[in-house]
Length: 119
Image 1 (cartoon, one colour):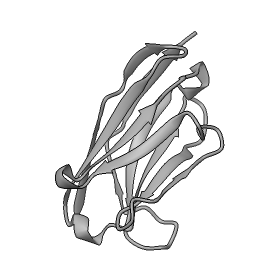
Image 2 (cartoon, rainbow, N blue to C red):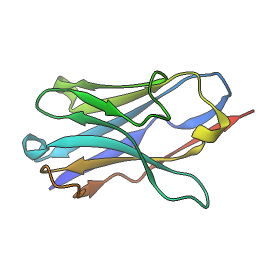
Image 3 (cartoon, rainbow, N blue to C red):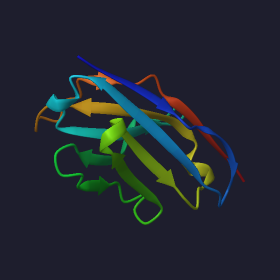
Image 4 (cartoon, helix red, strand yellow):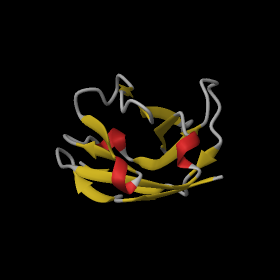
């Protein structure tokens, strides 16, 4: 089992920045990727970014590329999502999700953290 806890959400003005954190505990050695998803009211959940647990390589959705940066602190088993130049359309609940294999199935989810960007 892996437990995921997000933090760092909040209210920010457009153009501002926030940093989200996701701390993993438990069988973290079995992780394949840790990903960020987001879900805005009335919309489907969408992929934001991913980091490969073994290599720390990252992947981003086109909508956030160049504005968001995902990184990892190995000692703390924590991944970060640095979000810069935030836009109102970035408003959503952000979730951390853990994947244990190459299959596009997520085995573990955090509770989510709200990000609100005002115009």
